[in-house]
Image (cartoon, one colour):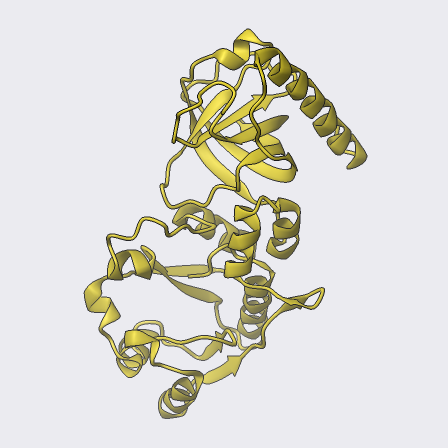
Length: 294
C-alpha cells in the first residue's frame, strides 16, 4: 500500500531508481486501491490511512519514480495466487526485469506468497530480485503502523521525523457557527474529503495553511469544543489563520502539521477560552520564530 511514503519506503524507492539507472530500465511502483481491508471487510469503519491515493501519487512523483501502476483491488483480484499474479501481471504485462521488495513483503491470495516463492518465480521467468532489510531510525523500526500511532497520539513532531516530511491533511472550508469570530479568533472549519484519512489526535497544533499558492501560519484545533458545545459527539477541525482577513468559504486548503502545543480542555467561560487562545497564539508565534520561519 505504501501508506505514508515514509523513510523506509523512500529507501526502497531510492533502490528502485538506482537499479533502473544501472540496467537502463524504468522505475515502476505497483500499488493497490482501494485499501484491501475495505474490500475484504466493507463494513469496516475504523480503518484510517496516512495518504489518500492522490496524496500517495504526488509523494511518489516527488520521490523520482517514473511510473506508478495502481491496481484496482477487488474480491476477484484478491483470489489470485502468488504465482498467477507474478506470471500474468509482473511478467506478461510489466515485462519485469528486476524486483525490489520490502523485508516483510507477502502477496497473493491470503498473503501466502513469500520472498522464497518470488525467488523461484524469478528463476523461472528470468528476472532479478532483491529484498531490503527493515529501516531503523534512532533504534526504532520505521513502519506505517508506528507513524499512524504517533499521529493518533498527537505526536506529529515524532511522526514527521520518520515520514521525512510534515504530515498534512487536505480539505474544504465550510461554514461554522462563527463563535470564534465573535471573540477575535475567526476560524475556518475544515471538512476532510476522505472519511478514512487519518486526522491527528485531539488538541491544539501549530500549522501551516496553504491555499491559492500562498502559505500562512495558523493554530489548529481538533476536538469537540467542550466550552461551547457540551453534548456534541462530532469532532471538529478548525483553523485560525494568523494575520489573515478574508472569506475563504469553499476554498480547498492544505493543513501542514508542525507541533502539538496542548490538549483540548473545557474552560469556565468564553472569556477564559479567549485568554487561552491568546496564549496559544503567542506559543505558536514563538515556535515559528524559533524555527526561523516567521
